[in-house]
Image 1 (spheres, rainbow, N blue to C red):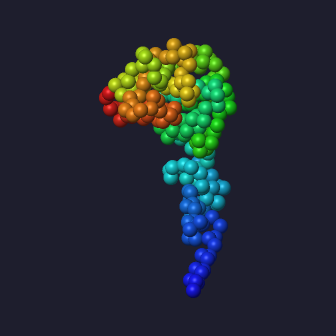
Image 2 (spheres, one colour):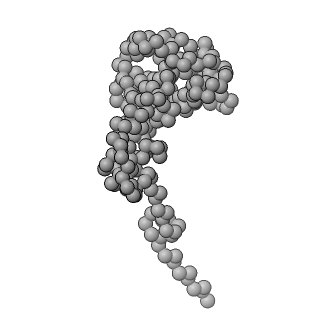
Image 3 (cartoon, rainbow, N blue to C red):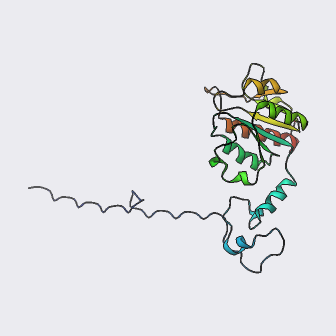
Length: 227
């Protein structure tokens, strides 16, 4: 005598392999303004009416884009960020996003003008980005602005970022993922800094290095932490 066959399990609904109900996606931002409308030139009437789903902090909800940029411009920090872009480096978008988070004065793209904006998460709309076609053009600009050029890379003459007193007015320069800083930038830099590592990998991702270096500047010049 054979055992009766076990009934087949019902098919899972599309997008739910376990048969469970798919979780609703969390809404980003806020809906239409509730109550009496606020007064002021910085408010965006369309956002007040329709809601604000942008990637901005709560302070800037419902603000016009140009009003946000103007407010950021009034308090930007004194450091700049530069990254070489000879091979369409995918890190640039993330670097721009981090520069926005730490309120860098400007981001400078050295080399090719076009860069992958996906990692920026639209933060490039609030961050000043300047293009320099050559290293020579970038160096001339930095010297004209009185900015110390500080390279971030692993060279025999690099000194530890952790014990270096970063200048207040400087531009932190990062190389292409893989080859790193070009010899021209290395030569133009006041100093080149390395980030101490303790694992087996020779180097860390350029976007990660940029975040570490920016935060080092913030600790030194915003929170007055000594090296």
